[in-house]
Image 1 (tube, rainbow, N blue to C red):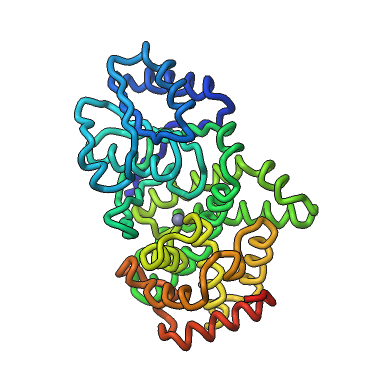
Image 2: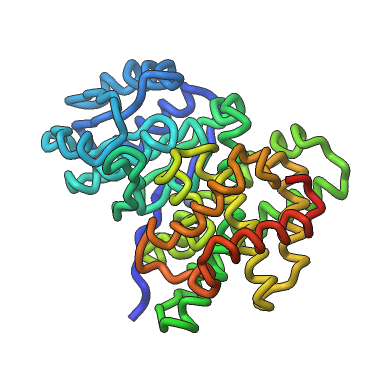
Length: 366
Ligand SMILES: [Zn+2]
């Protein structure tokens, strides 16, 4: 028996609204979808949504656009999609997650048209949705059947959003360490191909950052030259999660720290920026425990500094006391996930000592 997984039919990186419209029309016709639901949010994607509505109108029997008011589980549950064959998410991460989950509960496929690349959910089988205030839940869903990326909009999307996408990919390296640790400590099943794909995606981006540093490229040029690689790596992360059947290849202790910040204090930065910071912490803890070299931490920190991901408390925008609280609470944010945080004494003094040492080691001002 082989591991059977679903791979999206299409991965298209396009450069104008009309190219996206033509791709969507030909795919919908190829798949013989007649009743199409769009899920989107008001700004700043309405121009793309409008041009897709106009273009697709003559090619389908029924088209309806749903505006995401609040990207929550309860919002999805009240959506009426029984008359539709396919749901198309057009927008940022929360819109795509809403569309994926809406497709899943209504048992119809989802097409992903992301206008931002701030996390690895652009084409993954996981949807992170609000359950209640500050409490988000990772819901299982189907991986989209097509990923169509309007690169002209990604180019104009916020730099923080792109940095967040980069942070989310590089955090795979920490996630994989935790998954393998869990295999050793709890006998959790680890899928070799999911590991390979997730790690390759992360290392590709990290290597591009290192090359750009060597070539003394500006950060802006790095971002401009590597958008395609970032999108493809995020898509690979989605495939790794599809193979694993869980978020494990892309989410470990560094994600727990970020989820915990969200739960206790509300997000201080976009998801991927927080998990990147979490990766610095988990990577340092591994070095402290003799499970990895300090150079892995130094390399990661240098790469983050170069592209503008936070490496100090003030850059992240959180106090040390709050970060300590978030780390102490982190395992409770997704109970049952075994990570490096299970290997250390979770008391205030120990976490304070680790952080003090980490910031001093990095030579950064706290
Ligand atoms: Zn993530």
